[in-house]
Amino acid sequence: MTADRAALLDSFRRAFGRPAQLVAEAPGRVNLIGEHTDYNEGHVLPLAVDRTVAVAAAPREGGVRAIALDCGEEDAFPPDGVMPASGGGWRNYVRGVAWALGEAGCRPRGLDLAFTGDVPAGAGLSSSAALEVALAAAFAAASDLSLDRRELALLAQRAENGFVGVQCGIMDQLAAVFGQEDHALLIDCRSLEIEPLPLPLEERGAAIVVVDSAVRRSLSDSAYNERRRECGEAAAALGAPALRDVSAETLEARRSELPEALYRRARHVATEEARVAAAAGALRRGDLEALGRLLYESHQSLRDDFEVSCPETDLLVALAAGVEGVLGARLTGAGFGGCTVNLLRQEAAAAFQRQVVDAYRERTGLPAQMHLVRAAGGLRVGDA
Ligand code: GLA
Image 1: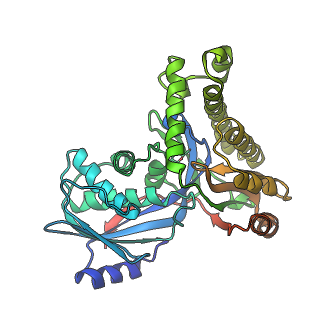
Image 2 (image 1 turned 60 degrees about the vertical axis):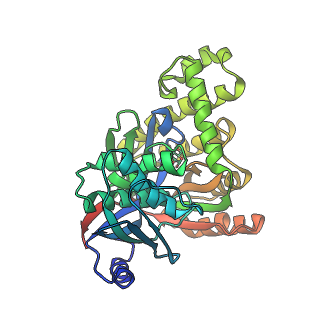
């Protein structure tokens, strides 16, 4: 557990005047490669990271009472007929999961719950999916609902799609549920099959570093939904069930059938699918140099074809490329600001801090943060 379990249980007891009965804990994730492919039913290659959100809970008669310990805020709502909270934010993740359970025909019980975590919020490490997955597990366990792990991931996604209003794919939730220590997960987002691939970082003297650009686009949710819509339109125009089914060759042959913007969106997805397959091959061979080159190529495609980068994340990648010992870098997550993922040799870490993070802060005035992450295990649920 990376969230502070003893402090969580103590806070729960003080807030509700009784002990918690169970704890559900889920990690954040970083995506190595396979960006904006999940909702096109393609492949992704994320890893769960060693930062988690932990939810302590105990069933009660009546409604749900929730406390976000890290910001000291509270919420209360009836488990039936859940309505969105006016302020939005974390409350709608809690309410959204209760709502999604109801939509799935499961009646959640009333619950006292408190949560804490060390996944930096809004930093592109999917703290929201970690919270939703941990909440889904807590609600299910407290209500004696037997949902399997895949169903928990789908339920968390449903909360995000149907209640929070972000039309996200399934990558973040599956990574939070199924993460494995020292492995990345090759996920087929159509069949939901998962193949864990060894990530030989330590033994190869390598590291993965996430840099938060500190750029937040207020319109990021609507821009994300717009990309998703464009992909759907491109697939429909080509008569394909999803863009995953359109290879780069087919796309070139039928280029004239698509408006230029949709063609470029589809080209990103087709070439990214090929890069994910190549990256999986590189991992199977333990070839981190090849993996790094694919990260740079993915960034170019996200910048030029999918157009989800911004000058700040482009700058972070350019600065990283200038550091001796950096193998690859790219925008990771939804984009429109957010984070980069960087693959580097361990001995390059100090130079990376200076030449990327410090230099970026000087050039932009933005408080970039760097997080060294390790591939960690997924969802855990147990007695308090
Ligand atoms: C966000 C979404 C994911 C995925 C990525 C882009 O993280 O939650 O489902 O679409 O963006 O790859």
